[in-house]
Image 1: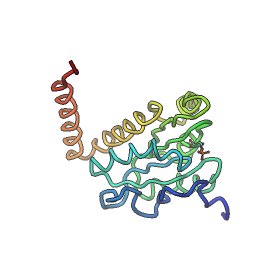
Image 2: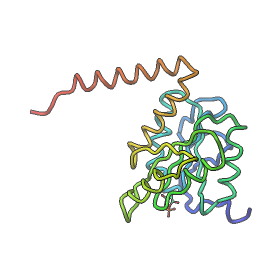
Image 3: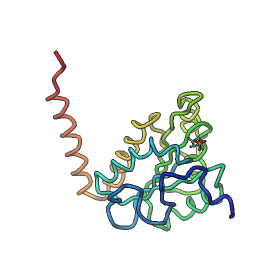
Length: 191
Ligand code: RP5
């Protein structure tokens, strides 16, 4: 595979899919990953880390990796084709610009794919959003909002999907919502 194996940017130590813990300092919860957070570039991490943080908060074992549709197409294919066999139940894929990663991954697996449009410099993420949301009928990608909100919600949606068969996660999700509600109720506007 040669040069395809090299992520364009170094600096953020994103683990490659299937190579163990994510870059969080304390690492993700132990156990084989149930969710993969993949992104087209290390430059997407600033957005996608929000997904990893939510998964960690909910105690969901996950992995994070750079898997670029156009720079590492073979790695992307290997990742997507192996996802089900490795026990992944949800894939969160973030990309910016001509954001084909979520759709290309979804084309090669039946594991549900949630797409996060990363905010691009040129078009502020509108290009990413349209690339992800406008999948032709037959191969779905669940499209989230542009940027960190989308990454956060992709992880919350992944938790909700996993919670269908895991009552303890459902309970944690309920508690999260209750706490969120309480915070809003208790909030005070500055005078
Ligand atoms: C896409 O191109 C990535 O998902 C990223 O959002 C965008 C720009 O990548 P870099 O040029 O910053 O590596 O593949």
